[in-house]
Length: 469
Image (tube, rainbow, N blue to C red; front, side, top):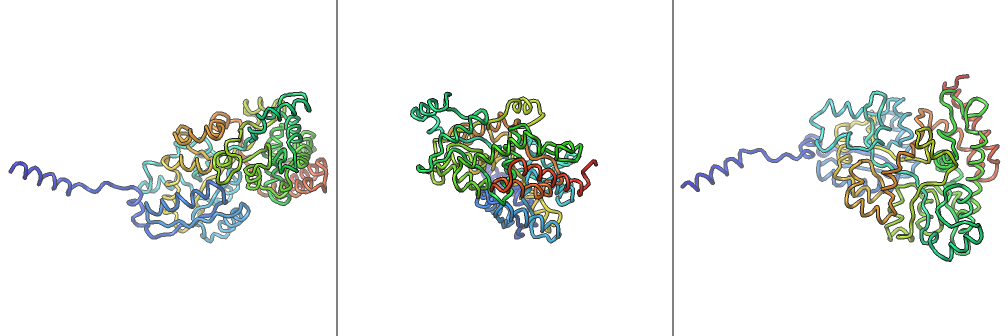
């Protein structure tokens, strides 16, 4: 009898207890069946979102995700046209670190800090802005509010072929020809020697990659965000206090140092594969993965798969990762916070003000911002936006296979920097880029190209009201 009473009481208690709450299904109770739409560039991190995270979110919430991954220029064009027209096609968009300042100036984006504060019922206990690396600071306004949830962040590193650099025959031949030991370049003279030495078209091997698509902004970015800083020309050579780019008006875009940097970079085309003048960041990664280059500047989002994925890369187990070559004084500038040695790239997902499904989009951004989804995402896209991701056992294992890429990013990431905080980013880029293209194809010398570029930048800055003259 006592046992029967106890059993009955226990059953009653179980029935009386509410079901264990599942935040995602409960928070989305009134949103099930909605469809949110987003757009991003087709990159390894974005493809992982499309193929893995979006279906998982739909299963957890009942909210469908239509996520379009396309080319960089199409992604940017579609997103900005939607926000300008206030049409509400997209409920979340990819925000590059370098374009956020322009979007904030135009009030395109929902304040995520404010949105979560206003709707605590949509706030997941597993999501916190405090979990992210300092990269999230790129997506705050002057008040510290957050407008984008970081989904990728990586540095642009110097990759080299360890199997070539560590080959005794190659080492002996290199030393005989150049008089010093073959090793990853510390300066530009060494980098050029290595590029020359390994350029062997008959073997389908060239000495370096060059991201020099003549007609695509990728070449603008390679020069101004990777090459120029390692020469000591920072922030595109623009002096924001003077509102000018030209030396005549207080800038550095056409300084002698900048002209040396451009001439050097263009000269590397002599040692690059024929696809270099049609290469954006994607083609550079493919070139290196195909074993067609001995060294190169490669975006970190590609570093892990190049080093570890035999289905996509022919150089698995042969990839070295290190810091780029640079001029004397650049490292000291970076360590002092007065300069930087290369590009800290990445982006976030934000919600356009024009979105008609803001609550569903807010849940989605929290979902992809959970610590629990970060490690596998890092393995797929070489991206880290949470500090804890670095110490995950899966990431540590891949780090060992990728020659310490994640360790390099964790320990040396502070030496790299994102794009300058310019609201006029796109306008000045478009004014300057054509002259970089002309230098690539030999229509202008480096000196001529940067003189014209600086003049065009000055004119654009004056038109936009930034010039102090």
